[in-house]
Image (cartoon, rainbow, N blue to C red; front, side, top):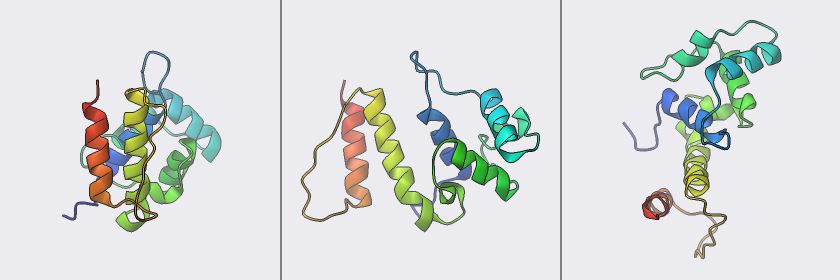
Length: 132
């Protein structure tokens, strides 16, 4: 398995981790299922949403995945099967969550290129996670 292949459930769980209240509690599956039901014009059960968060999550109907990505203000490609389309945003979102959780308001970088490579982003994330 390539290092830039991220299981569907890991990407879905990362989306849930982006929306937290003041106590750090992430948005619940009930709230997401209700929002998806409204936006898709059909009933989406809590079980359907929870199933996407479990190891080995299977790809459901495309409209559910697209709706879930939109619910969290992410491009629909974030939940696609193509690592080339979702891996960059996945790595960036992971880094932003670490910044939020560590209360780091911004990170200024100097780079010799316009784009940081995956290894550099991983090292940066690891460093930020180590800060107390």
